Length: 155
Image: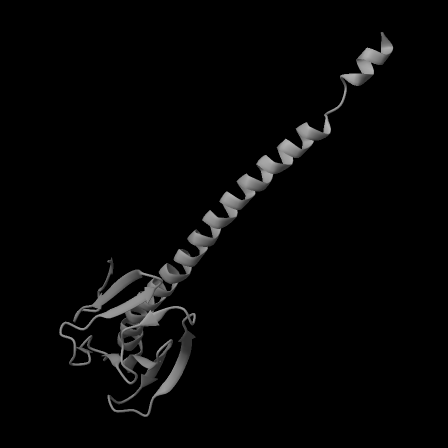
């Protein structure tokens, strides 16, 4: 009687292997979903950071009675700069490097410029000025307006 009770107390090797296989399959599904979400969040984080920096630049220009610009200095880089004059010299407040797999539509040297009275200057092309940021087929368009509002649209 005692030997029959001992046989029913554990799991067989096949039962353990089945549980491990199910766990491995579920882990693979969760990991791939997590990677996809993480890649998408990197793009969204970059888009919202640029939109926020444009709005912050306008607010800073008004608050400090200076000129502030978001200057696109490379295909994956922009910097926020301050000056007492529209034509410089410019003092860099900070620079942002976008991840290498994210591309922006701007031309090097483009800038969005604000003065202390909230006047805004954009590059002449395209009109209205907009910045497109893309990664792996996902695209966002950032459209700053003359009054400093920034609209973000997913295409």
